[in-house]
Image 1: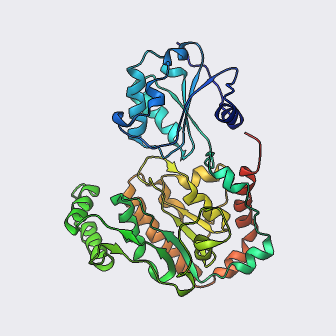
Image 2: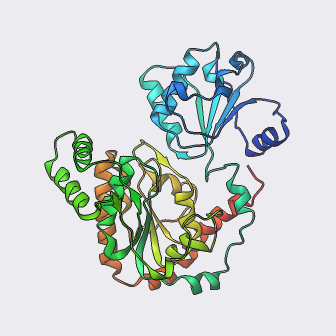
Image 3: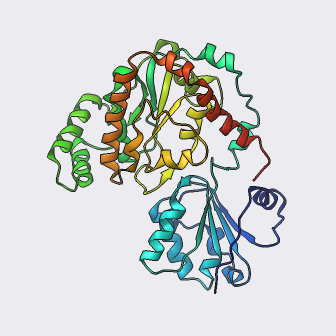
Length: 372
């Protein structure tokens, strides 16, 4: 059976999710708000749905979490075991750019029929529009007044206990002389476990990288298995948990207001596509330059109209498919950019304010628009 080409709209999803009203040319089958990457974690909404309906009309899944190769392969195997027209299934992802292209190429390589992926940009989630609807973007003069730039970049290590994210945190922590680095992160692994992971990442072929990660572990992981963050008295009393993360108040804004750029430590950085979540969108709203880690992330975001400061930052690292090599190239790019700009953060910010402002408005206007 041939695939019926459709374009799923945000307005149709809202009508279905809030009013139970289905579109005329396709059907929403499930909204999946939780991450999964194993068959045993497949949600009940998928397992109980009558997928034979796909023989007559396209069926749509809205997957509202990070997406990995394992997630896509789990879905592929699930549909292969069901009576359905797999080519008439559409999976919406709100957190990935480039996944649709990669999955199509993978399916051609394996000579497999598969579902279609449609990417909804700028994270069309059910929670964030509620936050964004309450946000009034600061006026230009107020932004310039509150931006007291003292550092080149900000970085948030996060609380996700993935070893790869801690690996990134250790690498960036070594750049503390010109960054505000928040990384009060629990380290659940011993030094030996970290070394084993480093050897796995390098295919057991790069002793220098293994020695480097051990140096970083010794330098920054305390006896309490904590990577300590910078201590700034002016931030000490600010709670880090902000119920409205899209805001111009609270901890994140106070940190970003001191920094020209942000290194975006997404939940997933090793996939062969770019993940885009609030960790990327908040820096845009905060009028920061964005330094993403994900594969081809800059290209994908530029295709959506975002501006990047190529004259300052060498973003060519984005094309390196190996995650660890890409990370090391990004670190070198940050060092070179810092050397180039010296301490002239405010001058650069003012000279390029129109472009920086356009990035913030692009995110803000997107969430305040009723367009699909």
